[in-house]
Length: 229
Image (tube, rainbow, N blue to C red; front, side, top):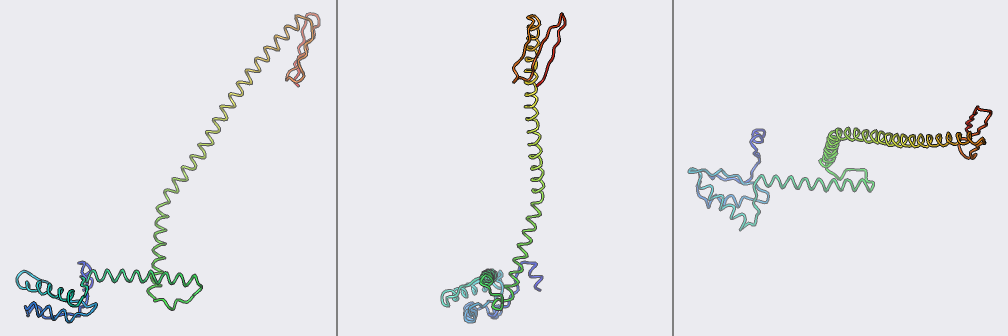
């Protein structure tokens, strides 16, 4: 029965207020009987109004609700709303007890004798749900971690390649400059050798330079010595 009602989205409840509203079509009698049976938390059971056979039930329901609200000052709700409110109250009560449990543990109270068993189950279920959510979130983040690792490797190796290219470019520029200076220095040295050969004189460059040139003339032969300091 409960499974059939649940499949149809219906609730199975027990009522405590009932009258023979089908056989007695007196709406005032139905309203007075139902309203005087009702107590706080009572569930009223009435047949569903239909087109012709039960049309008086709609009027009886209206009169019953009017008496309960105006005369007895009751708050009338449907069974579904009553169940939702009960669930909300249970949830609020469980949260309060859970906070009390945490506060008690913080203060050093190890015994849980003052807490119902359902609150301990609430604690277990809460931890289980949070653990499941955390595991699911971690599983979803795995691809992002892989992408982050790939991007980090690309940045690291790309940066090293960029630095290598820049350093190679500077090295080539420095080598070209050194070769240019070497060619200029060699041309100047050769020119000085020719000048010295023409003038029959020795030429000594400053000792702080890299090349020291000494020229000696013996007849028509020229001896050139390049000594690197």
